[in-house]
Length: 197
Length: 425
Image 1 (cartoon, rainbow over the protein chains, first blue to last red):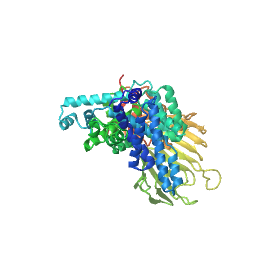
Image 2: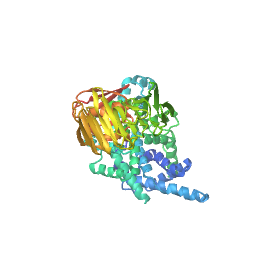
Image 3: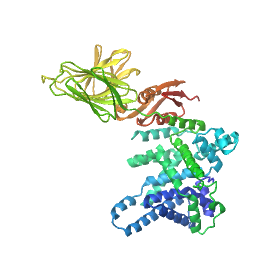
Image 4: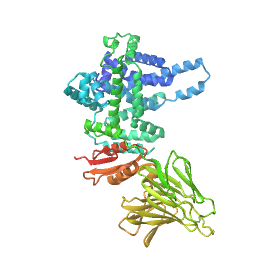
């Protein structure tokens, strides 16, 4: 599913569009599950918690005024629900209370940043049609030749070539490369970061 | 408080996304930089993200969650009706499918897109064609590993010993002094005090390109030998003087030593040998300094960190103070003195390349010595200079990516040969 922008996504969500709801689940579901699982250490519980969060999101889908608000809601809800789950578990066995508290009460910014970037990539992938995705991978990941791909998928070489080009165009479009007038700043930043090890 | 932190994280994530998409404004870049500079923790986070690897692995781990099942459960709990596509793993779903092949396909696609993102992180030009991006992928695979601790020691009897991080044992007795090789790239000599050798036995340590080694001489002087260099020294110093012979580059921490009669200090002399002949000598008492005397560099540079040194060539000599540098150009006989950039001159000792508007050829000579490669140039390299620093433990491919990023140069690697080409406008 191609979502043009955050604004586009928000409009559809507020309209109650179920496809955008599915899209958000596909993009954010696993990301949030992983985030929650890191706190609760329980796969099934994590999935359960995330399911409930999405249900809440649907219940209040009209109230958001930005996608940033949606994101904040998702992470806040994930965090609160995880901590509540942990605390109720800990109440059952209070022995190692203090220690595990310490490790979970501090929020780690990096996990949310990671989660957000992963969501970005998932959303880029989400827009590639299945067949194109497959050709793209066989060509650029498995590094098969066009002939090999064509033979395996029973397609013509020309189709394979076209699909590869198209996939790249789509992905590049998503990554929106603008001619690099800011590139120098950017390199400087990179070098600055790398230097300070 | 939690909410504030989540907002902060979302804001930084949005800046990084903009940076990847090259949509970031100068102000936003400034605030991203400020955030990175704010704490070493932030810097670490950013560096990890820019390296790409943890993110890629995490991305693949997400595939363990079944998005179809998730969608079905959520729809059920929310009281929504499922469509047919939700029940049958649809082809257009970003989801783990029951079909194993599809599952892996998706995971690999995630990695592919991620790779494209990672390339953007590495400042790929948007006008670079897809083919070029993938060519970079090739460079990565043919990665050139950075150098490490290795050297060859030639003992007085002519026998040779290979030194590296793995070997550690007492090598041989050289007259009265013992050569000991420790773990971790350090060769140390110990000599019984006041017992001077009857004859001077010379040892030579040679580092290859991509090798470095640290030696502690019998007088306690530390010598850090850079790549493609050699040092010849007595296994045990005679009383009269301390003299070593250097080719290439080394950093010396000379130990103060009184002469045997107790009057005055015993001088320490570094004789510099160039293929063209005498490269002068450096006379010191006890100081820290660096001597760079590579045959393919245009001058011998002696850089003083502490104490004082006297740099000789023929009949002329200069005395330099800490922070200064004596430069002996190959075609001149008299050393010149100037203020040194210690960070840049000593960067190699701290495992870094530091470039400050450094000419590409000079950069490549350093790369050649550290990654043990030959360099070939194609096109006009004049006026191409770079500034910045990078850790030497990085793979060469990473460095090439950065040097390629402003679109002026292209690097290709074949075996041990790196071809640097000027990209035509």
